[in-house]
Length: 363
Image (cartoon, rainbow, N blue to C red; front, side, top):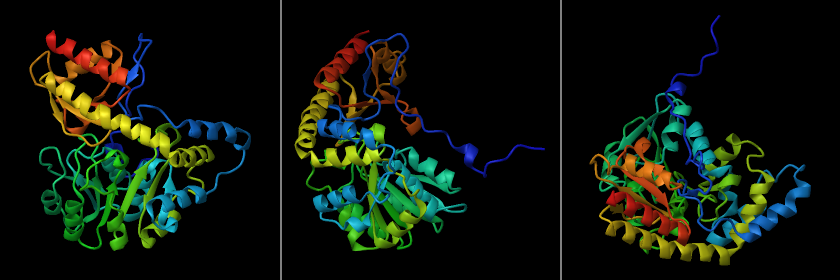
C-alpha cells in the first residue's frame, strides 16, 4: 500500500513564508517585514469589531453586499462586478484555478509577487517569468515571453518587492499586445499609496473589454492584514466565474464589518497617506545618504541593495538589524539576495532603521 499522492507539481511548491514577527530573547520588536500599515487600523474599524462580537454566531453576508456597494460608489464602478475575497491572495488563486491548469502557462515579471508562482503550480500550470529592466516590469519582455500556452498574465502594479510601477499608458500597451484570450490580472495592492499622475489602478481596462481584472486589498493602506480582506473588479464574464468557484462564505463577518468601517473612514486613510508621503522619501533619502542604493518606490516600503563585500552584504545587515530588534524582509526568494525590503514604519521606527544601518556600515 502506498500513501495518497498529490497531483504532479504540488510538491514543487515552495510554501510562502510571511514576514517574521518575533526574535527570541528580544522584548521590543520593530516589525518592518510585511508592509503593514504603519499607523495600524482605523479606530472606527476597531469599534466595528467590538460591536460585532455578540453576533459572531451568525453567518456573514456571503455576497458582501454593503462593502461592494460602498466600493462601487467610491470608485464609480458597478458593484455587481466586484467580488470580495479572503485577501486578494484568495482571488488570485481562484483566477488561476478557473483559467489555468496542466499544460498552461502563467506569466509575470521576474521579481513579481511570490504568490503568482504558488497559485500557478497549485493548479498544475507552469509559472513563467519575463526579465525586468531596472527592477521594473517591461512590456516588451512580457510580450516576448507569451506563448500559445499562456493563459494568465499577472502584473503587480506597483510591484512588490521592488516598489516600481508602470504608467497607465504602458499597461494599456501591454493589454493591447496580448491575445484576447489571455486574462490580464492587475494586482494593485499598493494603489492607494501612489501619487503619480500617470498611474491608474487599471479600472479603465476592465471597462474596455472582457479580459482584464483588477485586484485590491485591505491589508496595506487600511491595515487589516490580520482579517484577510480583498476585492476584485472585473468584467461580467469573469465575475460570474469567480462567484461560482469561491466558497459561499469566503469572507468572515469581522472582515466585512471592519473593512466597511475602515473604507468609510476617509479622514484616517488620508492621515495614513500623508504619513507615507512624508516618511517614504525621508527614509529613501536618509538611506541613500549612507551610500546604499535605494530603488525608487511608490509603495509603503523601500528596497535597499547592499554591496557584496563580506561583512557589508545584505545577509549580514539583516542579522545586524535583528540584533537591534528590527525585523525586515530578506529578498533571496525573489532572486534579490543582495537586497532587503523595509516597510515604512512610524517616525521613531524609521529613525531606528537609519541609526542601525549607519552603525552597521561603520563597523
